[in-house]
Length: 206
Image (cartoon, rainbow, N blue to C red; front, side, top):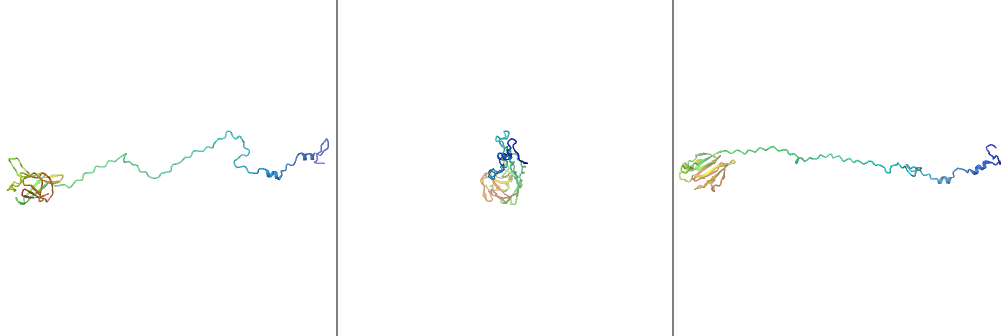
């Protein structure tokens, strides 16, 4: 028969022998179900070498993280007081109101009323005495007939623009605005003050 093979020696049907020796290779449903149908994990090699790659790196290299400092937009003040100091320009002195270098004494009582003496600093009030060599700037001899004024009675002076009157230890004393002065104690004198030297009344003016 066509398609049928027989043994040349015994004439046996070889197709039955082949069917017995070679069972069906068609998988059974249970066998198919028992197969592992899970999907390999991504990135894994199900057939990888169990001994691994001897040249593979043992650890993963991570590049260093560079941190950029935050920008500081604030304006910083630099203290230059200790490093450099600009010398200040010298301040010119403020000139005080200039005081007159001369003044006047006007007789108001006793003596020759209305007579005026021009004085400058210093001016000693007294009497001339040839014997002792005493020659005061203001000689009151003609205005003191009764002799109440001493040869060195008082002195009018000026210091830093301030006029002063000082009794020089006279016998009958000196008064400023009717107040008797202590000897050798300078007292400030201003324009319009009244002076009493002995018994001579004078008005001071600048």
